[in-house]
Length: 136
Image 1 (cartoon, rainbow, N blue to C red):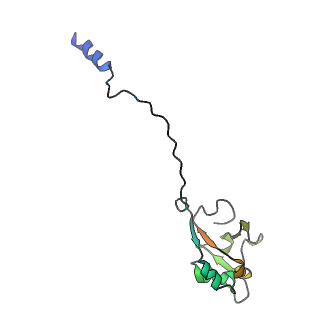
Image 2: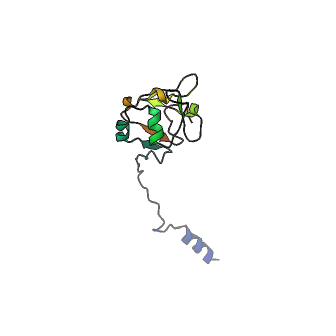
Image 3: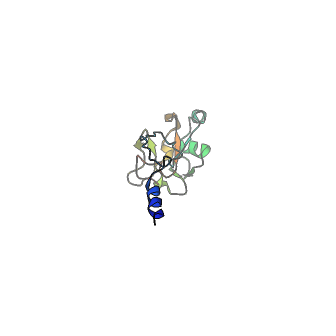
């Protein structure tokens, strides 16, 4: 019986290897690239924009991107279908201002001349419309 209390007393003494150590908190800061956040940018080539200055923006979209442009004839309405949705689900911004029609929700790209465009880009992905609403 004298062995049991000695064993319990030995187990209650902490080892030097298992002693707790306090570590200061560390803060990690960084930025996540846009593609990791669910958005992908596809900029248009500035040379292609300058070469086709006499065309409408519907022609530039159909020649230089994978966006489907539905044209109803020369000098008539041209709408855009992006990622399999209809034209009313595509949000069009010019310097942060919506160009979509408030009644139909579509944009007529044949009415936008190419010489007004210095740079343009397509935003793909689910979080490409974080700052605005009205598109898919």
